[in-house]
Amino acid sequence: MENKLAPEEENQLKNWIAQMEAGEMAQVRDLINNCNITFQFAKTHSIYLTDWEKTKQQMENNLNNGILPPNVSANLFRAIIDASEEVMQRKLKKVRKGFEKKFGESIYNYLGPDGKTKKLFGLF
Image (cartoon, rainbow, N blue to C red; front, side):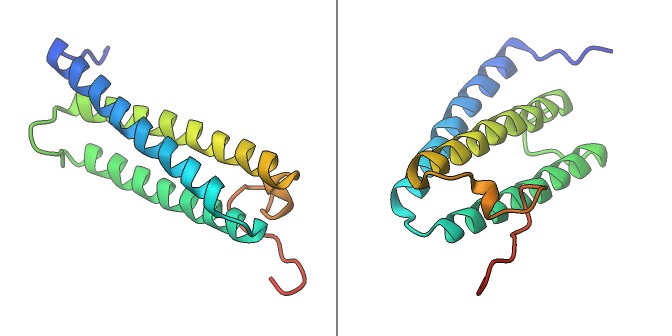
């Protein structure tokens, strides 16, 4: 069964994605411009990724239990979850590239192989 959005839902989704994308990319720029400590940058990235995964899981649970935002169909909520994941992945990619450009090294020098846990260096 194909999940089809009504035309008004398609427009609602496009507008929502545009607003969310703008906000997330502004946050990326702010993080890159204002963070001067590599470890703190990596730690913020790690916390953000973990928080997003929790948020996405809660959204999935709500969808599965029929708990939807006001005036949002199940199909539109499914589309919002999927679009959110795409936006977040683009954001994380920009953060990682921005880190490497600013600090001249990979963010993974400070994160574990999963990209979420921190590596233990000296005092950290």
